[in-house]
Image 1 (cartoon, rainbow, N blue to C red):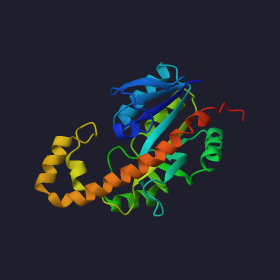
Image 2: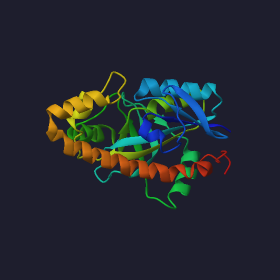
Image 3: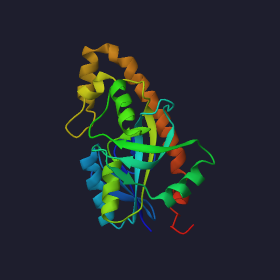
Image 4: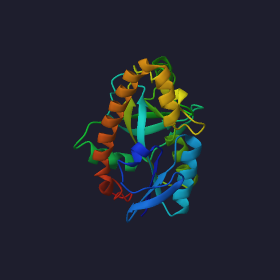
Length: 238
């Protein structure tokens, strides 16, 4: 049974494979593991999920990073969502059996946080906005792609799982350089980032901190990636 994984960012992609995948395309990284590199945002994620289904994926995983909404979460913490809530506050279910099976495997070697994962249609930079979202939704974390992938899975009646790792804690305000460097696809443009940093050198410490947080998140994702064969052995009757 082919499992399709959607990955939004190149940094997240490197936690799964060293193979080059063009944005908007997919390839097999193992006999039954098919990875799509979507680019950021729900529209790209939905298109990638549709591509995976067209290529034969019988279940879908949202893979990558997230922002913390829960106060206790720190960079590198693993989130195995047990519920999703979209930008209109409608709930989308997770496959409970696959979730339970995955939790039993992962919790043997790493701390796993379960809870609701909320959708954002754009980057949420401010700590105050993250706290407000937590108050409104009760979600422990937030990302831009998981809901879109889950809705494609629901459309085709496929099992879905969200595996996400925290980058920015709830108290962290993302550096202003990030929003100023984004293109219309939600991707950081290095040239714009460097230009903004040249004019605002005080942004550098925040960017360094964010880079360290990404490293912590990617370290966790690489640990989980080693267990993908076991996670995807689930057939629904364990």
